[in-house]
Each structure stands twice: as structure tokens, then as C-alpha cells.
Length: 331
Image (cartoon, rainbow, N blue to C red; front, side, top):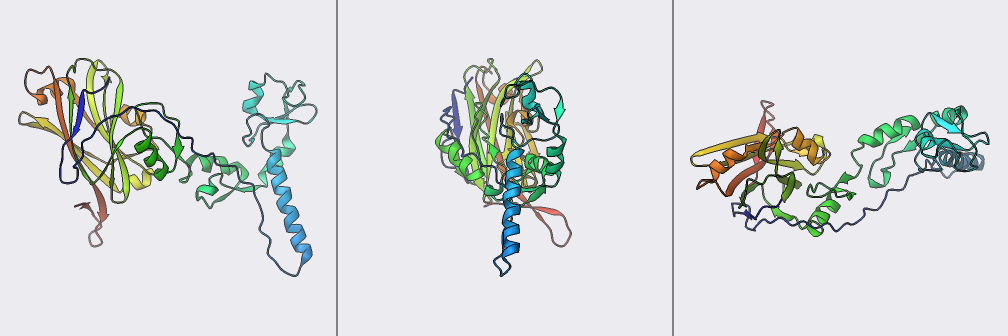
């Protein structure tokens, strides 16, 4: 389902017209190679120390390679399985290869490689997102848990109109949204949108990302969606922050919709794009308008949806005297 027209009405900060385009050109974000643990050698007069350090580096690297599953190439974690000939693979891939060793084709059985599991405990390795800026080094068995939550891990594309598989950092995703999804980009912290649909009785599960806003040096995604909430057709608008949740808590936003002398107002904090679009929608964390009320706001004979949503974004600042948060509105 698509809106018949979407207008971005000029306000203090907006002068362009907002439109929705559905394009699905994809650019693949370069994969991050898995770094190996190395030990830096310090130049000095003790050649023996240097030799030992280099040997340790090669040893750590070779052990790390031994811990790489030959099927999925991911690092292996207990239980690590092996065949009778000593070939290893991870527990996930053991079921995928139907209990046959992928190297020698012998039956795997239930043999654990306890020695390799024990060796892994002694390793310390850098985060796999080291090339993206993460400086941390972790024991082998703590590394995976960190990487699942690492602040430097790439973000998923926040475009909700398709199952886009692109990942990357924020500057890369902003360019991707603009060039591949044709999303409108606006500078400023206020917005004023009007949604028009000639047949609002047709409410299907469809999503539109209206625009990306740039203010306070950050990027925000404004979503507007029509879907069924139980048996009731509703419209929903919400804001997502292009960054991590800890940063998102520094900002607030408001949304307002109304007509015929009535209005609804929503205030809240933007959700991080770490939370999927569906997760935010299903938690009802935004401005929700039932269809009957939206048609009432539209006026006329209620046969056409004409909904105007306005809003603003502000940054919460700590008051140095009283400790309270005070809003910092952009001009």
C-alpha cells in the first residue's frame, strides 16, 4: 500500500517537499576480516627476547587458525567436536554435515576435542571490529559476548520498506539511504508532514520511511506506517536515532496530529536503530492514531485521509546547578 501523496510542508527548518520512493539497489558493505592476535616486538639488544616474542606471535596466530571451523569459518566454542582422525568442527556445523567429517568423510561420533578447548582458554584476542575502531582485547571465551554488543559493530540499514541486507557505519548508511532508497534528507529539528490517501479503508501492513533529519550533528529517521492493531486499523509515527541506545537517551522528540479543533500529542525518546523497525512498532513506542480518529481529523466526508503530523527534536542538557535536564532547542 502506498500513500497517494506525501507532502513536507515548509516550516522553520524545512523547505523541500517530502516524497516516498521505493528503490532497492544494494551496495555491499565490505566485510570485516577477522584479526589475529599478535604481540608487538620492541627493538632492543636482546635478540633472544625478540625471537621468543615473534615465536609467541606465530604460535597465537596458528592456534587461532586451528580454532576456525572449516565449514562455517567462524571461531569454535565448546563443545568442539573432532573425528577419529583429529579433524575438528563446531557443534552447529556437526548437525549440518550429518555427522560426517567434512575433511575425511569419516563418521564423527561424539568425540570432544578437550585439548583444543583448554588451549582456547589461554588466548586473548582483539575484537573482530578492531578495524572499525574497537581497541578492546578479550579472553577467547569472552570475545564473542563482547562482539554481540560492541558499540563499533556495523548497523543494519534502517529502511523499513524492504528487507534491506546492507550494513555499515552511520555515514555509509546515510549515503545508502539517500542514493539507493531515495530517502529525503533535511537539516533542522522541526518537521511538518501531510499524508493524503484517497482510499483509507484499505489498510495493509505497509511501511514508509518519510525522511532523515540532521540536527545536533546526528541523524534521525522519521517513520510513518499503517497496520492492523488487533482488529483495528491504525496509523503510527515514530522516530529512530541513527546511533547507539546510550546516545539516543540524550534526545527527546514530540509529535502532534490534529484537526477539527482536536489534537493528539506524543513525547518520548527516539529509539536506536539497533532496535529493529518491527520491534519499535510492536512495542507501540510512538504516536498511534486509530483510523476513525484520523478520518475525523481529516474533516470533510471522511472518505479521504488528510493527516498532518508536526514535530520537533531537542537535546536534553544537564543543568550544572540543579542537576535537572533542560531542553536545548535548535534554532
